Each structure stands twice: as C-alpha cells, then as structure tokens.
Length: 69
View 1: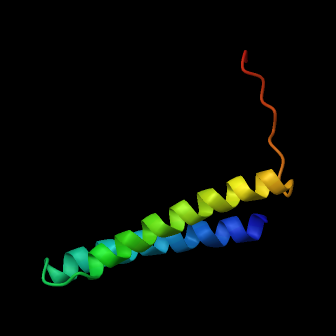
View 2: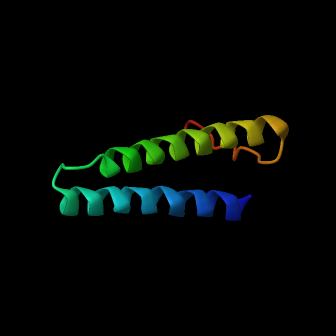
C-alpha cells in the first residue's frame, strides 16, 4: 500500500513538472500543458478515491488522533 501511494505521488509531481516544462517551452501554442494538468487532476482524484476505498475495505486504518490535543 505504501509503495502504491508513493508511486502515485511521484506520478502527480512528474505531471506537474511536465506542465511547467510545456508552459515554458510551448509559449501557449499547444495544449500539452492543459493535458498534463488534467492528468494531474485525474491522478489526484483517483488516488483520493483509492484511499477512501482502501479504508472502507479495511486495508488501511485511521490513526485515531484525539481532537483535544
């Protein structure tokens, strides 16, 4: 589980970096930056939904941090 989440974060950061690269090199002439940012949003939503599903299935547990501390 830890490896999957780490790989997903690396892919999200890589997509953000590629969007920055396309923004600097294309100067608004292509849609590669938009597609890269859309991929980042899709990966982020997928990761969030997978974490919710894994918690529902019992694969991961919440930490139970007390609210008063």
